[in-house]
Image (cartoon, rainbow, N blue to C red; front, side, top):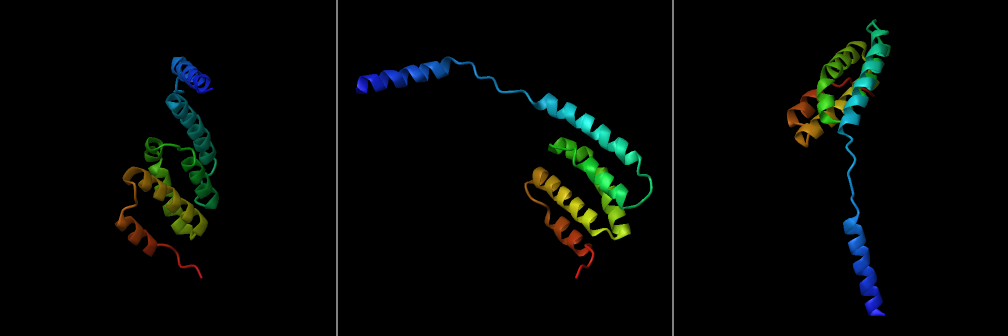
Length: 129
């Protein structure tokens, strides 16, 4: 009985070692998909030229197209614009979503948000009861 188990185990190991396992190359798909998503989001953003909450939402939609750190770095100016406009409009939800996105950006690039980022930006949050 143990001979049968050993032969079965050896056969299984040899079988799995002989199978060619290729990892999928998703790098090109992520980049290609990002460019398409970003182009659609920027087209929608261009429809909102007035400085209102709709523009903030469209800017946040542009930010949502980034999946990897390199893409997020490219979209950082959109985050800055959305944050400035949210402050100007006193739009707390837009500002909060920008802080979350920027927190993910810093977490990925530095493995933690810099302490100065946290303390300075927490002081600038609008006072909510």
